[in-house]
Amino acid sequence: MENIIKKLLETHSLTVDEYEDLITNVNISDREVLRCEAVKLSKEIYGNEIYVRGLIEISNICKNNCYYCGIRAGNKNCERYRLTANDIYDCCKMGYDLGYRTFVLQGGEDLYYTDDLMAEIISNIRKKYPGCAITLSIGEKEKETYQKFFDAGANRYLLRHEAANKKYYETIHPKEMSYEHRMKCLLNLRDIGFQVGAGFMVGSPKQTNRDLAMDLKFIEEFKPEMCGIGPFIPHKDTIYRDEKAGSIDMVLLLLSIIRIINPHVLLPATTALGTIDKEGREKGVLHGANVIMPNLSPSDARKKYLLYDGKVSVNDVASEYKNNLDKLMESMGYKIAISRGDCKK
Ligand code: 5AD
Image 1 (cartoon, rainbow, N blue to C red):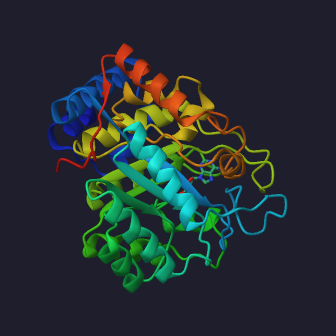
Image 2 (image 1 turned 90 degrees about the horizontal axis):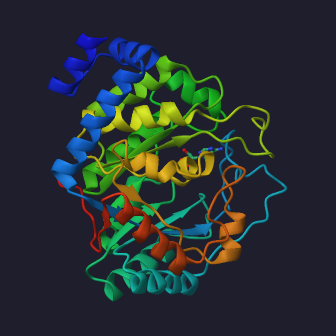
């Protein structure tokens, strides 16, 4: 184990076998070594600044049927909503006034937002906030569409790869969804010039440490600018309702390893992490995360954008949340940055 950790710290790279060995056999003191190294790297590159992104959940209507997800098309119990362009602009305004300089437009794959409508929304936000970053997280599209969004002024795109092992990807997705297409999307986004975010869930049903080791190798090789990971959490209206949630310790370990593999990566302490542990965000930061994504969605949208059960912050008021977050991060020796928070690669 000592040799594997030494190799990881020196070369930022391991084989899949070594990643598997590492995450399977680390003891408590190894974890602490990794955690300290991750925090050190994050501070060397990003100082004590934590970047924030204003998250706008634009729609919970989705054409896909991912087995794990609460807003999958087949869920008849999900109360659907979508925001209008004006609703979205209102969220941006509120976010801007609170000091957010990145807006993340996230939603299910909702065909109501045609390419033209989306491009119009993006270019209106771009015109109004020339100094802000616009991040999209609206799923798989063809390359021309991504190009159109980029030309309209979007800068970043989050599309979790979900699983680097094709066999496991196919275990948690219906056959209409293609591993190859998802991977192709990530390559296309990069090719166009987006800052790209990949990522995966931890502890989803039947996932093995081998699968996670393959995710780590993928992150090492693809080097996304951002990497979103969080625990799997069951949702009552999915076939995984009785499965157990992913372990916080594994998420924290993987956050540290990802920071070490890819020191410049933007690494969020995700909402799912804050949901399985009330101090999840803090713990995330103390394991190498440097991004938090507060919710700017209107409160009834927030209550309906439920990918898993028990989601936190559905009742928070954006301004109060921001104040509390500022104080919390200060108490930990960090400060929330008022900036776009680009990747420093
Ligand atoms: N638990 C945790 N994360 C989930 N996601 C979807 N469903 C769940 C769940 N039940 C994640 C997926 C998706 C992102 C938006 O949320 O990885 O890409």
